[in-house]
Image (cartoon, rainbow, N blue to C red; front, side, top):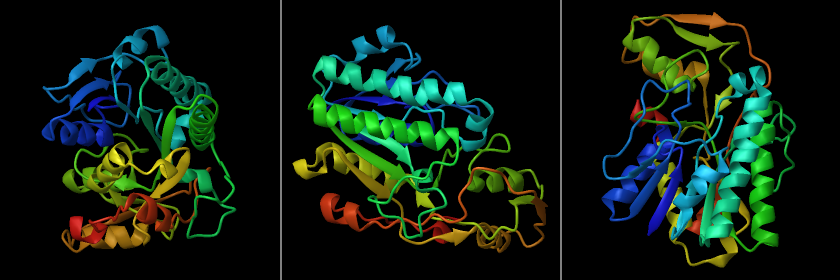
Length: 299
């Protein structure tokens, strides 16, 4: 395949780029290196580099010519920064996504795989979360990512551009963002342990998250890109494990290997769900996908 990966120098995108190249596919990587939580960016030396912003349609469109599959991961991807700057989140996650879809449509791309978020479920939906639940967006990040879902569905139905939508549940793993207070919690704990600092617990630590390893996310994308089942197009799929772990339990897992590790409790943050838990029956059924790595084993 000839592919485009937007956000391909970031955490999840770089793992996907590496997998594609290792398996003989041609990869164009579009990334403007704007992710503030990343310590560094990971450009595979065998990909075609395009350090451009997806909000600039005229610059990105030429890279979509002759492309088979687009993996759209580029986003303004953190809840708290999006709360501070909603206009930036809207520009990247809505206008940028529309640009990616329009370039794909104009250049005859066969399918687009869109990376969305489990934060679409919010607080009103009782876990485990199923894809047919109503959205309950609590912040500009989830609002703009769900808007991107709507664009994907519309391009699929109206313009006949095949799209697949993934809602990721708390992705972690090698290369995960570790910079700043709003990096994902596994990355924050990693940085704090490495720097011999207390692990910070937001609120009581009773929040539960469905932690999903990045390699499992990559496999979901590959299956969506190669599946012959047309029933997947225009559909939303949860990408999680079907189990969850509290933040205090996560800290305990780390402490087993760092017995003198202390905890530092900080105030709760607005706009965040209490519990995330994926129902993964749909993705198991239609894409034959199965998560393989457990958070406790990885730690």
